[in-house]
Image (cartoon, rainbow, N blue to C red):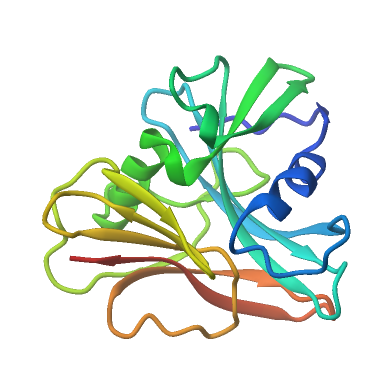
Length: 211
């Protein structure tokens, strides 16, 4: 199980995301610098214990209306060769030292664990507490799930990111711009919750799997 350290990161996660989010094609808020609040998320464990994985929800209040984003992140102790396009930035962790923070959609370790979650081989963990499952994250399977383990191609769209997982067209879709009670139209999907600006709670689809 991943250990959640009570320490600092410099720059912080929302600071890194404030620079990165406006560069994404699915960024939907204002034209100025984002104003981000962390409002939800969960984690998955790396079986090898090397890569941190977090599925963070941040709400940007810089535009005319709040927009909530789902941002899968991986934290690594060394840079990944050939993955510069996925690098969000680096940060100094108060316990672990320098961490390379990646867009998790493009990290094969995270993709493999999301598939393990769909297949019942991984358990969602609380975002900020060590060794604590998060039962609010739910997995809805639809038929037989494909036996694939990584992304062949990644494509950003208006509301999310699609990862083609094999040559037969199996696709893992990551919802980036979250909407409450979003429909997965019968596909296998993972749903989770986040906090609204007014203090209420919302739930929506974070991932869908089609093939």
